[in-house]
Each structure stands twice: as structure tokens, then as C-alpha cells.
Image (cartoon, rainbow, N blue to C red):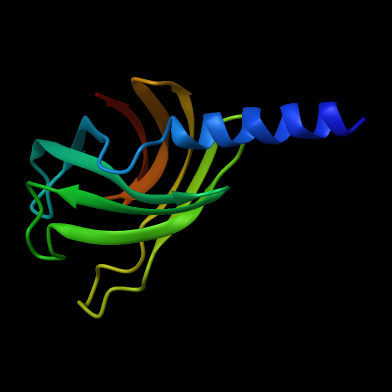
Length: 127
């Protein structure tokens, strides 16, 4: 039994380490601007720190400067790859909080959804 627990613990640690600090993933999302025009928004996502299932990350929104380009997010990454992250509430009017719910599909892909520009958007982040 001790061998099984040690193996399970080691597998969990290895999976968590697969979300290495500094890993960068990029995504493009089409959404309407505040004036109603279609626009491609570029996003980057980086893991800052992973301790067990606890995650600290940074979300960069390169094409939306009103709310700031950089948002710190905290949350969890389960052993099965389920990733849930939330930013602090922005002090800027109309910016709110970023909430990303998704999954780390493999070492190179994170998929999920996040509310952005008035709608729930699908995201595919790739290394």
C-alpha cells in the first residue's frame, strides 16, 4: 500500500511539474470591439508557480489596453489537467474579473472558455 501511495504521489508531482514555471501559451480570439467591429485579440498565458494543485499564472491581453495588458490569475490545476483560474477584480470600470475554465490537454495545448468582450469565448492556447 505504501508503494502505491508513493507511486501516486510521484505521478501527481510529475504531472504538476509538466506545468513548468515560465511556460508560455498563446491564443487568438475573434470578438467585437466596443464600437462593434470584428477584431482578433491576442492572448498569452504563462505559469508563474505551480505548487501541487495550486497555480499562479499571468494572462496577457495584447490588444485590449483599457483594462491593462497583464492580469495575475490564481487557481488550480488538477492531476487530470482541469485548469480553473480567476484574476482579482479590476479597479477599472467595465473590466471586472477574468475567469478561465479549461483543461491542459497535453504539454502543448490548453483549451477552455472565458468571458471576454461581452460573451463567453472559446480559447485554444498553444505553445
